[in-house]
Length: 201
Image 1 (cartoon, rainbow, N blue to C red):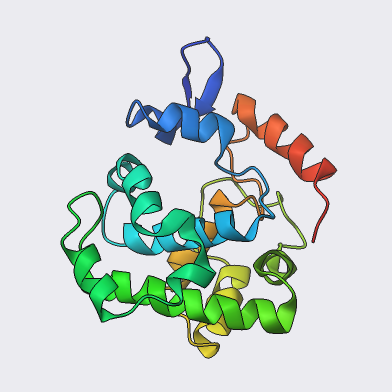
Image 2 (cartoon, rainbow, N blue to C red):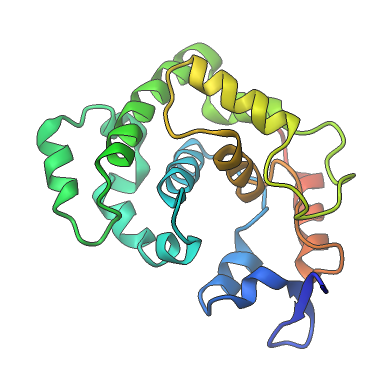
């Protein structure tokens, strides 16, 4: 099966972005572009955890509500959440009301604070897992990698939750740790240029 579809401008894009109208902008402007901002990184890994077992369309549609509920994914603020906040979030119909995932984000916010304390920033830590052969594998042909397994294992060792290798791999794709756009996708070259000019933390 062809890995691309023709976009509204007549140019090829990753096939998955045709699955829902809101995917196109996300694909063209966010997915795979390198990220160094800690709050954005925490948002991405949190939303990937919420996506586990659900469709990405559900998560993307609710992203504004997630941002509001979790204070823009300010992990230092989320780290101070208590049981009252958990109950508040469980009543919020704008987000995915899954106690385990909500509690995991709060736990992970505390672990993120610890990680920044020891490693300097989330970005500095995550970017250590950039594949050395980035771009040498067939795009979108895997759901995990040696790097996602290693990162998942290290995060779990540090007490993070809902960070299995598949979730971590999706996070790595989304944050631009490697370029997984289809070979013929018009955005692949844009992402590659962004990665080349990106200053690793």
